[in-house]
Image (tube, rainbow, N blue to C red):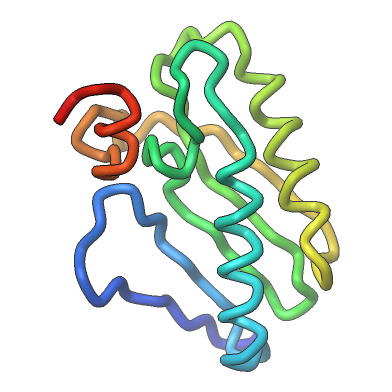
Length: 130
């Protein structure tokens, strides 16, 4: 199995997920995939909160293996979210459109529990919390 490289955020951003890339994925491709996946995440909005799931900090981890299979660990704003299945399918669809990806597996997790501290400043502004 190929080694994995974890991208560390140079400056701690509360909504930034942990990015893990197989060492087989070259830096230029990592940069492209990261940008394309962030853009894809930003197209998905929580239906009850007028903000995208990326800026809300709902994406915890994105793992890209040597075959470009994408594994996403994410959470929801509340464990009993009635649209969990819809959001999961939206992530699968959006990330699945990123060129060069083999497929997407989305896993909903509740550890650590989501809280408003994971939201970006952009999310806070859009929700009039600043």
